[in-house]
Length: 435
Image 1 (cartoon, rainbow, N blue to C red):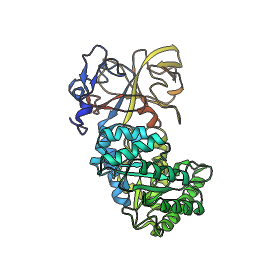
Image 2 (spheres, one colour):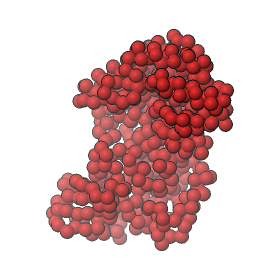
Image 3 (tube, rainbow, N blue to C red):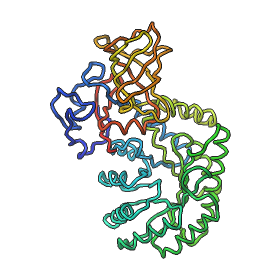
Image 4 (cartoon, rainbow, N blue to C red):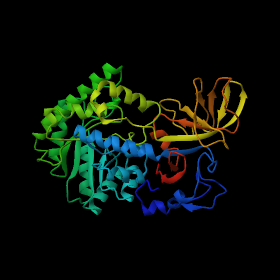
């Protein structure tokens, strides 16, 4: 069963017992050979903790997002920082992604090493070293299409200087970033937008303006307050786009992009930026977590999204959690306390604690059983999860416990090797991450 696009350089990576999740007694093998090893998570073929992606959930989530994009008219450049896996990028590009989004020059270096030809940089690049690398890549590869964002005259001047220093013969594509008070980066007013337009025009053709960008997930407040703040930000973005397209700095650029959209409010963004003021633009979303989804934060976000956007029901079943970490129950020193072999070094905990979702007793028929009410991970150490459980719980030392996560970005970055499994937990492939 082949689940990934083959990338020869990654398939050739030689994996051994120095890589977390690889069985120490197994002979080293290339990543491309892992799917034929005959391993199964429930059979105890892998050491715990071990991270896995369920192939069926990946396929389901890819199909759901294709349907959403077709219905909304938006395009997607998924944020690669979520997984930093070129193998998963290749799946997303095969699904028709506009490109891949990144946030740092280090991430861009990984993308370029693996042949990503269209990149949206959803962060300002500041500083000579990073700017010189960007310009050198644009000079080296005329087919490389890069979009940068700017939110200051100083940043525009640094970018123009780097282009001159590197003797770049084509303009650097940029978008103006607008922001919200108390949020993050991005200009706050139309006066600021006008100052940026003037600076881009003064760069003498070194920069080409291709749209306006924002990031809406920095808003705060309850649901109503957050939605109102997002609408205000999108209104500013549309106003800035109208002004920018009338300026000398735009030069009739194609494509003209209106970009926003994390993994929580992308329905609002797709709808808000498709209004008449943005009708001639390409609405570019950057949601990165849809592919793996999760068991807490984005599951809750999906429920809220479905409530405010009833039309999503026409797309069928929503996203499924694909990323899991399997652990072993190593100690139950008290009737209502147990300890699992996974902790902060293995699991995200920046937004929510992980959740215990199922269990399996080695040697039993290979069926994962649900955990009843009262099983709760309430604390993490570096290498332990503290599990509260009912005194009547059947869990015993040696049982395997399936852990669901919240915020996939900060679980992927704890794993260099992630196995891809079928619904029977047979290992069918593996990905490598580059954090």
